[in-house]
Image 1 (tube, one colour):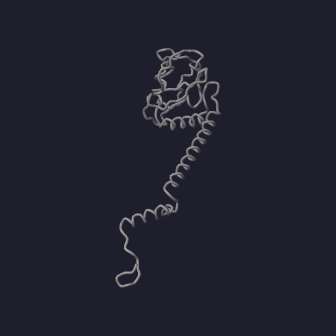
Image 2 (tube, one colour):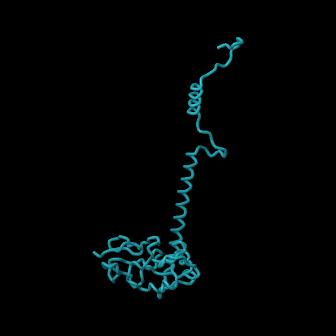
Length: 199
């Protein structure tokens, strides 16, 4: 179309025409990479998820190896590890439980903490009576010196707990649950937990 001076030039377009053209252009062009060239937001999220999954897998693998190494050294006939190994076991369970005493749930210093058996050693094999008391039996087999049956504790808490048969006192209810024994049918016995009734 010619303008008022007779020369041809761009035509005036309505605002609706301009918005439709802009939408068409936006649909036609792929999302441009951001300033650091990492691509679209979706691609960044996918990459972040992959990296997070890989990191979690690495942490789990390292933990599995560490646990295997710590559990490979069995205590001697008196039920004791070497002092160096005991310190390694203490460090592991102390960090695992958030630097808290497994018996009372309060914070503790590693220098003042002890490695403590969650299921007392006298209950290597046990049943559970109705009031959630451990009794000598054969249904549950304690994991004994395995890491899931060990926790860090205050000296006082360790002595105060002793060989109690009260399952609710084995591990504080605010602590992460651990599988401390296996049933004769393969089921896990976990503490802290609701009282388990015998068969």
